[in-house]
Image (tube, rainbow, N blue to C red):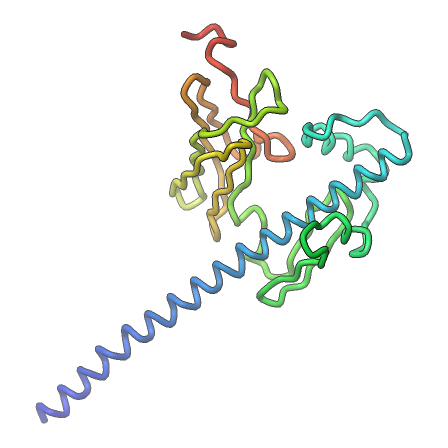
Amino acid sequence: MHTKFRGILLGVLITIPAIALTLWYFQIKRAIHANCCIENLARINAAKWWWARGIVEATNAQILPPIWDRAGFWELLQTNPVGNAVPSEEDLRTHLGGDLKMPVCPAGGIYTIGDVKSEVRCSIPLHKPELGGIRLRILHEADPRTGIDGATVQILDEAGRWRKGVTDMSGYVKISTWPRRPVALVVSKRGFLTWSNSIDKVKGAGDVLLRKKSDSGSN
């Protein structure tokens, strides 16, 4: 009887960790697929942006904001007819970079490109850019062409957890919060005023402008 009980107990002790390990593996795989897909969506969205800019430049219909002013061009697309255009995969291929192949969802989702003003979407519900975190560029308010390196960016997700990252030499930072939606952020850098706000206050293309303390009259 005791031998049988020990056998059952041993079986349970082996089975539970095996199940936990399997669940952990699939959760990690799920997160990797989601983040890879979200990166794909960002890449296709960028290709749409460049395609649209090329069309507006070719028509000479409007004076375009400088290339570095992504938010300004985004605002222009809200009223320009090009914003309603739907590019084909062939249109976007030359703007994708790398091997010029259209990215595909690693989990088998289907991409809907949509018009220029719309974000590319995946058919898998949790593969949404707004759930994947945020990619920002931190810029000097006095010169928005210049990124700020070494700025600390903290992101609050909808579950109340904070994630942190530091900008690179060009002022970019990518922080993943999947599968939670980011809701607020705090940006700080020595010598600059701290920027704290909700995610929806970030300028259209993902730019945050920091002001030097001396520019605001602070010591």
